[in-house]
Length: 151
Image 1 (tube, rainbow, N blue to C red):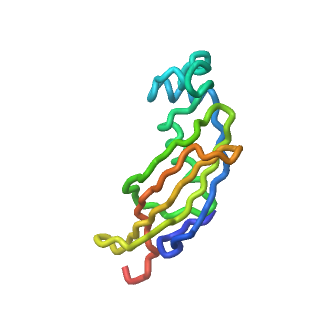
Image 2: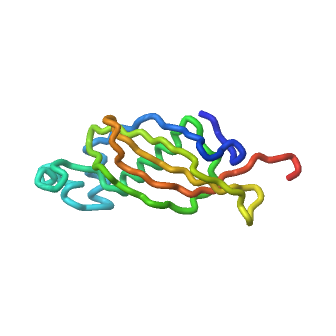
Image 3: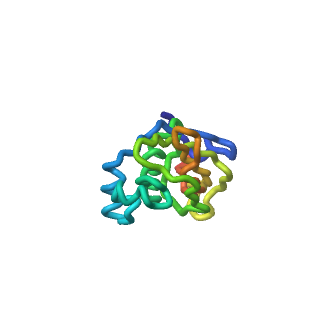
Protein backbone atom coordinates (compact mmCIF):
# COMPACT_ATOMS: atom_id res chain seq x y z
CA UNK A 1 0.00 0.00 0.00
CA UNK A 2 1.31 3.42 -0.99
CA UNK A 3 0.26 6.67 0.63
CA UNK A 4 -0.20 9.37 -1.98
CA UNK A 5 -0.07 13.12 -1.50
CA UNK A 6 -1.96 15.71 -3.51
CA UNK A 7 1.00 16.07 -5.88
CA UNK A 8 0.82 12.34 -6.68
CA UNK A 9 -2.84 12.37 -7.72
CA UNK A 10 -3.94 13.69 -11.09
CA UNK A 11 -7.11 13.16 -13.12
CA UNK A 12 -7.01 9.61 -14.43
CA UNK A 13 -5.26 8.19 -11.34
CA UNK A 14 -6.84 4.86 -10.35
CA UNK A 15 -6.65 2.49 -7.43
CA UNK A 16 -8.58 -0.55 -6.22
CA UNK A 17 -9.15 -2.48 -3.02
CA UNK A 18 -9.27 -6.08 -1.96
CA UNK A 19 -12.69 -7.64 -1.46
CA UNK A 20 -15.09 -7.74 1.46
CA UNK A 21 -17.72 -10.47 1.74
CA UNK A 22 -21.09 -9.52 3.24
CA UNK A 23 -22.64 -11.88 5.79
CA UNK A 24 -26.29 -12.42 6.65
CA UNK A 25 -25.57 -11.76 10.33
CA UNK A 26 -23.94 -8.37 9.63
CA UNK A 27 -26.73 -7.30 7.28
CA UNK A 28 -29.41 -8.20 9.84
CA UNK A 29 -27.53 -6.61 12.75
CA UNK A 30 -26.94 -3.35 10.84
CA UNK A 31 -30.50 -3.33 9.49
CA UNK A 32 -32.06 -3.87 12.91
CA UNK A 33 -30.11 -0.96 14.35
CA UNK A 34 -30.07 1.58 11.51
CA UNK A 35 -32.56 0.68 8.75
CA UNK A 36 -35.20 -1.73 10.10
CA UNK A 37 -36.93 -2.66 6.86
CA UNK A 38 -38.04 -6.32 6.55
CA UNK A 39 -35.85 -6.87 3.48
CA UNK A 40 -32.82 -5.93 5.66
CA UNK A 41 -33.79 -7.74 8.86
CA UNK A 42 -35.96 -10.80 8.09
CA UNK A 43 -34.79 -13.37 5.53
CA UNK A 44 -38.28 -14.91 5.22
CA UNK A 45 -40.08 -11.58 4.73
CA UNK A 46 -37.33 -10.47 2.34
CA UNK A 47 -38.26 -13.31 -0.04
CA UNK A 48 -41.59 -11.52 -0.66
CA UNK A 49 -39.96 -8.10 -1.23
CA UNK A 50 -39.09 -6.52 -4.57
CA UNK A 51 -35.57 -7.90 -4.04
CA UNK A 52 -36.63 -11.51 -3.43
CA UNK A 53 -33.90 -11.94 -0.83
CA UNK A 54 -32.29 -10.30 2.17
CA UNK A 55 -30.32 -7.26 0.98
CA UNK A 56 -27.86 -4.88 2.59
CA UNK A 57 -29.02 -1.35 3.48
CA UNK A 58 -27.47 1.44 1.41
CA UNK A 59 -26.06 3.02 4.57
CA UNK A 60 -24.34 -0.30 5.36
CA UNK A 61 -22.86 -0.40 1.85
CA UNK A 62 -21.55 3.12 2.42
CA UNK A 63 -19.92 1.93 5.65
CA UNK A 64 -18.32 -0.99 3.78
CA UNK A 65 -17.14 1.54 1.18
CA UNK A 66 -15.43 3.55 3.92
CA UNK A 67 -13.67 0.40 5.13
CA UNK A 68 -12.61 -0.47 1.56
CA UNK A 69 -11.17 3.05 1.04
CA UNK A 70 -8.74 2.25 3.84
CA UNK A 71 -7.77 -0.93 1.96
CA UNK A 72 -6.95 0.75 -1.39
CA UNK A 73 -3.65 -0.37 -2.94
CA UNK A 74 -2.66 3.28 -3.33
CA UNK A 75 -4.56 5.78 -1.24
CA UNK A 76 -4.59 9.52 -0.65
CA UNK A 77 -3.22 10.99 2.56
CA UNK A 78 -6.67 12.09 3.64
CA UNK A 79 -7.26 15.26 5.72
CA UNK A 80 -11.07 15.48 5.62
CA UNK A 81 -14.13 14.61 3.60
CA UNK A 82 -16.04 17.53 2.10
CA UNK A 83 -19.03 15.75 0.65
CA UNK A 84 -20.51 13.23 -1.73
CA UNK A 85 -21.99 13.72 -5.16
CA UNK A 86 -24.40 11.58 -7.20
CA UNK A 87 -24.63 8.49 -5.01
CA UNK A 88 -26.43 5.65 -6.81
CA UNK A 89 -27.39 2.11 -5.80
CA UNK A 90 -28.14 0.44 -9.15
CA UNK A 91 -28.06 -3.18 -7.89
CA UNK A 92 -28.74 -4.76 -4.50
CA UNK A 93 -26.07 -6.61 -2.55
CA UNK A 94 -26.71 -9.46 -0.17
CA UNK A 95 -25.14 -12.14 1.98
CA UNK A 96 -22.29 -13.93 0.24
CA UNK A 97 -21.57 -11.07 -2.17
CA UNK A 98 -17.92 -10.04 -2.26
CA UNK A 99 -17.52 -6.32 -2.89
CA UNK A 100 -14.50 -4.51 -4.25
CA UNK A 101 -13.91 -0.77 -4.63
CA UNK A 102 -12.26 1.03 -7.51
CA UNK A 103 -11.60 4.76 -7.50
CA UNK A 104 -10.56 7.24 -10.18
CA UNK A 105 -9.58 10.87 -9.77
CA UNK A 106 -11.79 13.02 -11.99
CA UNK A 107 -10.47 16.44 -10.98
CA UNK A 108 -8.35 18.26 -8.45
CA UNK A 109 -7.42 21.77 -7.42
CA UNK A 110 -5.39 23.46 -4.74
CA UNK A 111 -7.19 24.73 -1.66
CA UNK A 112 -7.74 28.49 -1.74
CA UNK A 113 -7.69 28.74 2.06
CA UNK A 114 -5.22 26.00 3.05
CA UNK A 115 -1.94 26.01 1.08
CA UNK A 116 -0.94 22.69 2.70
CA UNK A 117 -3.99 20.91 1.22
CA UNK A 118 -5.60 20.17 -2.11
CA UNK A 119 -9.11 19.14 -3.13
CA UNK A 120 -9.53 15.86 -4.97
CA UNK A 121 -12.68 14.42 -6.58
CA UNK A 122 -12.64 10.62 -6.60
CA UNK A 123 -15.26 8.62 -8.50
CA UNK A 124 -15.96 5.49 -6.41
CA UNK A 125 -17.49 2.30 -7.80
CA UNK A 126 -18.26 -0.81 -5.77
CA UNK A 127 -18.72 -4.02 -7.78
CA UNK A 128 -19.89 -7.42 -6.64
CA UNK A 129 -18.17 -10.66 -7.68
CA UNK A 130 -20.24 -10.71 -10.90
CA UNK A 131 -19.02 -7.27 -12.00
CA UNK A 132 -22.35 -5.59 -11.24
CA UNK A 133 -22.21 -2.08 -9.77
CA UNK A 134 -23.86 -1.96 -6.35
CA UNK A 135 -22.81 1.58 -5.37
CA UNK A 136 -21.39 4.53 -7.23
CA UNK A 137 -20.56 8.02 -5.98
CA UNK A 138 -18.06 10.84 -6.21
CA UNK A 139 -16.28 11.77 -2.99
CA UNK A 140 -14.76 15.23 -2.58
CA UNK A 141 -11.89 15.26 -0.12
CA UNK A 142 -9.07 17.33 1.24
CA UNK A 143 -5.69 15.68 0.73
CA UNK A 144 -2.40 16.65 2.35
CA UNK A 145 0.43 18.08 0.25
CA UNK A 146 4.01 17.01 0.84
CA UNK A 147 5.93 19.17 3.23
CA UNK A 148 8.48 21.18 1.26
CA UNK A 149 10.93 22.04 4.02
CA UNK A 150 9.81 25.69 3.78
CA UNK A 151 7.04 25.07 6.29
